[in-house]
Length: 185
Image (cartoon, rainbow, N blue to C red):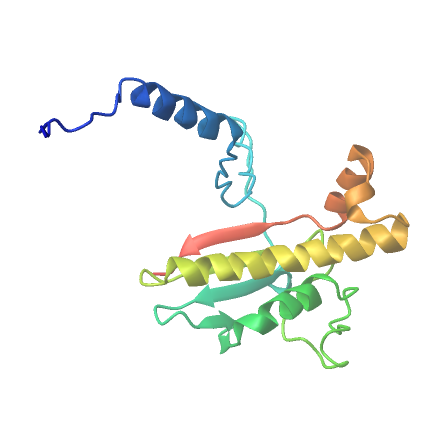
C-alpha cells in the first residue's frame, strides 16, 4: 500500500471576491448614524453703522452657572439638575407677575416680563465636564420644547409635530430660545 503525503488544497482564489462582495453588501444596507450636535442658531451680524447693543432688563435674565465641580447654580443657588427644567419654565412662562405654576405659588426670585424678553445666560467653569454641560443644555431644550408643545396644544389645538411651517414659526415666536453662553472668569 502506498500512501501519498500530499495534503489536499482548497482553492481560495475566489475568497477575496466573496469578501469584497460581502463588504459592499454591508456598506450599502447598513445605516450609519451621524451625530447632529446641538442645534443652535447664531445671531446675525450687526450691519455696519448701526448700534446693535440692546439693554436687557436684569429681571429678564436667568443666570445659570456650572462651576468647576459640575454643580449647577441658578441665580447663585445650587440646584439639582432635575429641577433646572421646571425652574427655566417658571422663569419663562410666568405672565410677568413673578408667580409660576411650577413653584406652588411662591414668588420666583427672578421672573421675566414675558417669554419674548427672557434671556437664559449660561456660564461654565474651565473644569466643567462635557457631560454636565450637555445635560444642562438638554434640560434647557426640554423646557422650551414643553412650553412650545403646551402653547401649540392650547392656542393652535394641534400637537407640535403636526404644525405647518407658519404655525411652527408662530410657536417659536411666542417662545424664542434666547441663550447666551460664556465661560466663567
